[in-house]
Length: 420
Image 1 (cartoon, rainbow, N blue to C red):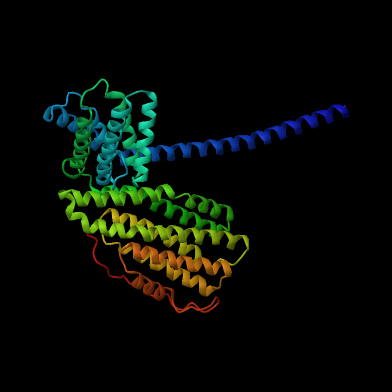
Image 2 (image 1 turned 45 degrees about the vertical axis):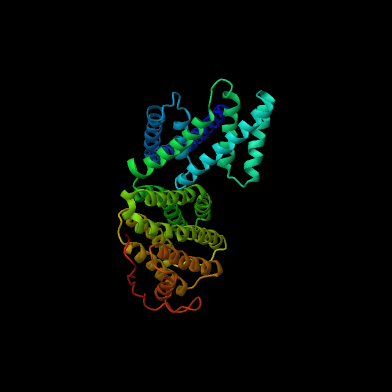
């Protein structure tokens, strides 16, 4: 009986352990599935956002392709106007902001390809080795002349077409050259006159991912400081470092908007607003980099078990909110007063934290709050000198850790030229 009771006891313990492991496994699997669900939702949002950004370009490309075919076929009498739509779509497919330059490169590349192809065909004839020689010569010639990658590709492609199609298609050179001019010109016409995009809308959509990324990681860093969770802060740092795509999209959109405002009479009244946006790109980039330094030092602060005064996470929170307000007020075409006020409040909280006493890494975090706030103020349209003055005023007269913080400086609303 004793042996039986011991066996039953071991069995119950084994079942209980199995049940415990089952509960742990269930929780782990549920957590993993929740993460996968969140990632799939985020991926879907990202894809839908990219689709929305590309709708205008897709409409422009479709219209330009159709019109260029009509122009080359009906107006110029080209029975097979293949190259005109290709040239139009090729012009629009490059990065916005480079379409006028792309049209010029397209025409130059076609000219080089036609010249090299005709010259070598005249002396050498056609065939596979002649084709290879023509392509090589076209590329070497354009590279030697200092041509861009677009010119090199266009010259090589045109040379291929000349060598392969000239035996079966008479007088290919002139239609090819004219098609390039027609397609590129139609693309510029669609961009500037027929279907110009709203440059501010394009900019707002392009700026949102970069600013949302910055705000979200500052929020995560503030939470990590409150919880003394170095892992959470490190995750925010890793994500913020991976910001090249967002910044590249923003910079590209600025160039495209400036081109639209230059070429499109319907958008000329937006030039001053676009200038403001263009001037904001560089300080936003600096704010990204300085925030990265802030978050990196916050990791060290937690790992070294330095003191974290309560106002320090609040200062980082205010920076995140300043970024959100900047994006919101830019999108609405308003003077970014709330963004400025939040930036200065972040500096004020950083001053209070410094007065409460911080360690070495804490003093770096405080300094980076000041620097990032200054960047955001400049992005909002304030001069660098004025931003520095406002930051010093909001921070207060604090020269060393442990100095009395004194009363919180009043947040002054700075004045700047109105947006637009």
